[in-house]
Image 1 (cartoon, rainbow, N blue to C red):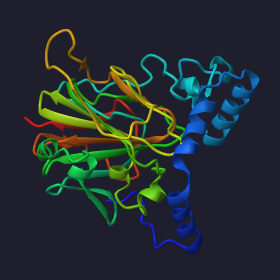
Image 2 (image 1 turned 180 degrees about the vertical axis):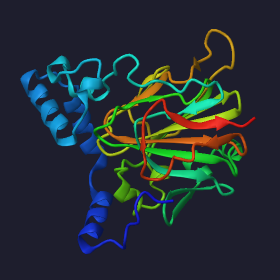
Image 3 (image 1 turned 135 degrees about the vertical axis):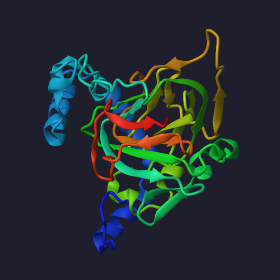
Length: 297
């Protein structure tokens, strides 16, 4: 299913698409990252107020409700929420949604192909940076792609209990991941910079991927801190133990990472282990902590 039935692009839309191929994505993103870290007092607070107004950000649910509570734009953007602002679905057989945003696409992985948008399939191998062994675990499985807009809460949480086994940093492009471009730029998620995290869970392996984008100045995880910058030019694979003091274990609903500015989270599940929530349809809003699906008996 598609987020929106886009017709063939008009001349202006084709120009917009073309511009994204020639924009200096990295330079724009570096400037955005530089600005977002600055602590400029009244200037920073004015920018935050303007952002809140333009994007209709709900600050009443944030732990700190006022623009002047944040020293930098990044502090505002990855703002924590008040305790219990996002109740986590309690049933031990239930998985929770990892992020606020909306469903970009959801459904079955056909052999090794999943849907970016109508008419734009891409492969597990491409998404997982050529890791064929990892891709094999999700053949004919299921996936969920969640788009986070600039107004959303930008911390990403665990859909279930999991033990981290592998993290792959994949360098790539920095195309915007908004719904319009997702419908018009082939292999967008498999071309953009991303962080692939594979966890062992009660039902088998689960992958959660943080996808970078234009102006997404950095992505972070709770176990490794800020992943980028620096932006390396090669794939970096880190493996983690399943037990012992250095094992990374996270509970359902716990924070696992964060974005600086909007982007996308992709979840992969093996074949036959999850009954997805039937209310998850392309274009539907998502609220972190609510029902993603249930582990099959």
